[in-house]
Length: 417
Ligand SMILES: CC(C)(COP(=O)(O)OP(=O)(O)OC[C@H]1O[C@@H](n2cnc3c(N)ncnc32)[C@H](O)[C@@H]1OP(=O)(O)O)[C@@H](O)C(=O)NCCC(=O)NCCS
Image (cartoon, rainbow, N blue to C red):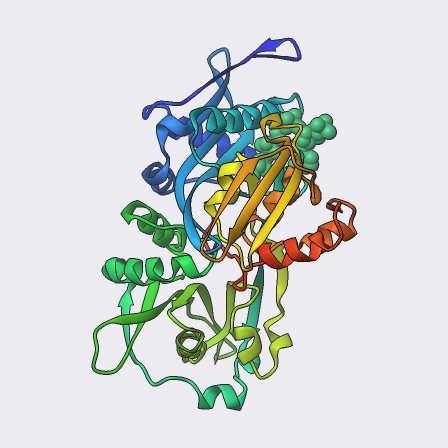
């Protein structure tokens, strides 16, 4: 492919090339890497789904796709997890990212693979032009000891559970079972096999000398039963300042089969002795927000989480479910993936859906990125309409579509990929 007078080759990379591929990509991110980082990433990368962009023999850009099974509203669906998108500082702003995006999406479409793509964006200004919309958000929270108390009414209702504290690596099977059982409830997370658990736990692992422990798991079970109902995954860093304890806790995730179990696990972690500050990324509807006696002390900061791209409108809208029955025609505009442009008849509800191309008149009109933004059930069609991005064509259609597309549980992916 010629860009600005130079010829470029796009191809997947080999096992031997992986360390160099990773180094070139990380250089674009500006990060320092270790051999441990290379090995961690090699464990999850699918070589046949990587893209190396070469100028002659020189690697100047990277990209990859993970084959994910992701929770979407009411179901699980294959999703292309787009990752490690970089262009070397020497070759930026010449259209290489654009060409990489085009090849990825066209490749998925032509091969009939994942109907949806998702990614974490390093910067939020990059991906809308390629048809991605912000499909979920999360809160980054930082709580000091003074802010850890729960509302007394919540404390009274906490379930009585048994707890075990284990090195997370020793209980991966249990963690996986609890995690996967809860998956279909919350859109935006994905099933983790052994490789992904290794990745998850090593993401939370620190360099030697940093003072952080390896990830620990506190597992909650019903008294008298050995069936796990939830876990909190965290690590700690002990410290003293002026002889006073100022330890830190990083909570990687708290997963449980009910809000009560999750809150009981929060209590376990927030009650750790000698710790002074806690930080975590949590779903915007995490029960912690209402359980804290003084919620502002969690200092929640909103950030974008997953960006979603509807690769094939028909298959994507068929793959999820809808909170209410919906029978409507969507007019989709998609300059970057023109096969999506046109009218689509969506009939769906809580038990399933079907979406096919149609000649019927449209009820609402929207660009592909807006469809990505509402795909996981958390984006607001109303907000998009107020900003002029979604246009109502038949009276009442916007309200009906917004009610059907919105899912009661907020989408959240706790893990960067
Ligand atoms: C982001 C990055 C991949 C862009 O690659 P690139 O080859 O320079 O992108 P392109 O030349 O195809 O740019 C396409 C368009 O996106 C815009 N764009 C690219 N990067 C952008 C950014 N970081 N912020 C805002 N706009 C950006 C370009 O200005 C261009 O806009 P135009 O079509 O209006 O002219 C590259 O700068 C990079 O590797 N950055 C560091 C790593 C990173 O952040 N990667 C993304 C991981 S999620």
